[in-house]
Amino acid sequence: MELALFRIVQECLTNIHRHSGSEAAVVRLSRTAGSVKLEVDDKGKGIAPEKLRGIRAQRSGVGITGMRERVRHFNGVMDIQSNGAGTKISVTLPLTTPEPDSELQEARIV
Image 1 (cartoon, rainbow, N blue to C red):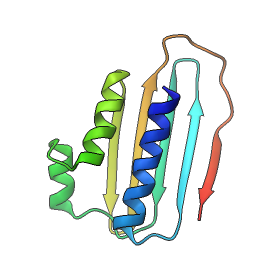
Image 2 (cartoon, helix red, strand yellow):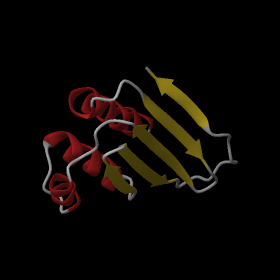
Image 3 (cartoon, rainbow, N blue to C red):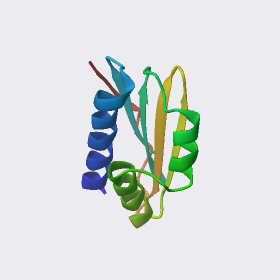
Image 4 (cartoon, one colour):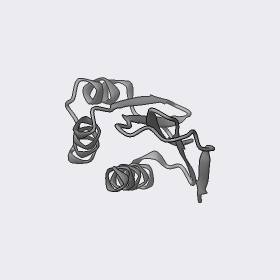
């Protein structure tokens, strides 16, 4: 699961660098007793509405398809929200072995 999360973050940051125009990204990783949640947020130009509809209909490039497959492997959920003020990708993966809640970890990538 750690490797899958790493690869998802890597793909998100690659997409931000290539497409968004954002100079920074915020990566949040949190864990509860039942799940791990990852959020990657940028303040770039966002994804055009027609392209976002295609992504949500699972007509997307190799990178997002790979992210979707990694999430599916763990029976997780991926959500992409975007507008002219940026994009937020949220991934939630259920844990099979619950552990105690931990604090939110946040890193600002500049």
